[in-house]
Amino acid sequence: MLRVRSLGRITFAEANDVQHALVDAPDDYLLLFEHPPTYTRGVRASDSSFRRAIDPREATVVDADRGGDVTFHGPGQLVAWMIATVDDDPSAGRLHVAALEAAVAQAVRRADPHSTLGRVGALEGYPGVWAHVATNPVKIAQVGVRTERSRDGRRRTLHGIALNVTVDLAYFNDIVPCGIADRPVGSLASLGVDVSLRDMENLLVDEFVDQRGGPSSLVTVDHSEASHSDERPLIRRLRKAGVDPDVALPMATRKPEWLRLPAHMGEEYSKLRSLTADLSLVTVCEEAGCPNIFECWNDGTATFMVNGE
Image (cartoon, rainbow, N blue to C red; front, side, top):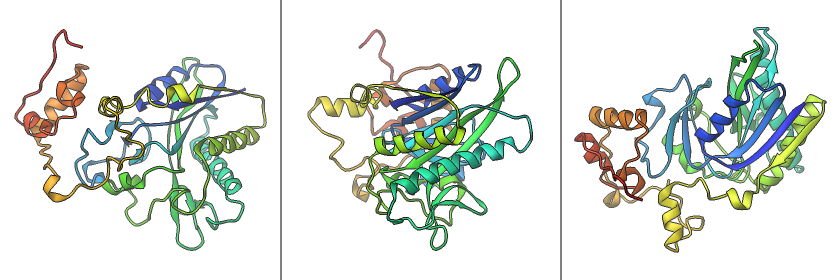
């Protein structure tokens, strides 16, 4: 049985908790969702994977227990994680990745009846799904997985694949996506395919169900209620103040030099950031989106509210 869960927009931490909770489940699960702006670092990521320091007011940076390098997730990107039982054979992981890529590629072809994207599929020597494979390859989907054992000894897959539908590609400029510096990243929208995230999700579910050939069930959350529930506090405050971030310039848009504040992310900043994360502390600096956070934290100073709201 494949149980499909369409979760709307949720944070990486929430999605990660869900997938790990399903490792011991008897059935296989397909989780579909979007993230708020988030950079995830796989096991191969390093400091050189980032082209600049990421402002925490623009996007979250988290470590992911999956293969691969660094990538970006955000609104307009369809993430599909498969928690499934695979064989103990050493090739099972590679075959699972190939199946994810094949399902996404076929769903994209169905969304592109006029072949605007040229040949869509795998590109030899590179992970993920690519458009214009035969001419000028552009990456449209990133893949990264891992496996772990359930309590009863089954080998279960985690994480999965992310398809760029209408995602803001400016966020990819600040990283070396998946460690691949010599190939461009695109989205269906940027390459001329007009399809909504919801329609793309339906196509992808159909492909996964057909691929597996067994029974399935689908549960969808109310997207209208969930769409803004997990936004960063700064964005929620902007909405309450009457500012609509959806029609404003993306937060990743480059600011003019006179408005840019140097990000001093030295040793003291990193130590304090790790300490607050380890202790699960919420700072006024982060909640308020303070522009001086780098200067203060680099001096070893953070601000907290005690007994406040």
